[in-house]
Image: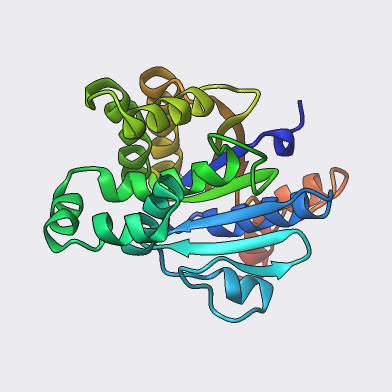
Length: 250
């Protein structure tokens, strides 16, 4: 099965390994296959606009290319939009979510802000009714540790929340995230000791703890061979030749 035929992809890796570049590249590739794509950034220092040459990306969904939308979600904006998606009617939403005490409770509930962003992205890929807004949602996840914390949230909600809409949504998301036909993770790393070690730990956590399928590994900054196969013996012999020449000249 082709990687881009899924509904939901997490692009995950240590900070500084080129994760956003990979996520943007995947989003562009999918959009050029006539798939409607949402690239969802998770409250990060936004760099996609520099990569694509567009205006800065904010918390409102914007179209940056044919079939490609991007959003940089923040907890507050995602909580509002996720709440409106659930409650449907703006008057009801305002009565509930704009209440100062309710707002303070929601913002103080562990994991709920992370779920509001992840849940909103999930809703775009898999609404409870009707057709999804997008063929593919790609989440440019936070750096490794924060990404794992975010991914744990729907599984925790599914196991501890009382019956209701929040638990049902989390259960639907958890079911999708564990289905290799619909979702999975793309890991990004560098050919260096620390990023590689962290990626191995990340892969183990995703696979063994969360049961989220790891679909692909991208290793950035891999240098091409500088010399052709027939040139390498000559190059490898240069240090000895230089040493010999130095002795003769000394």
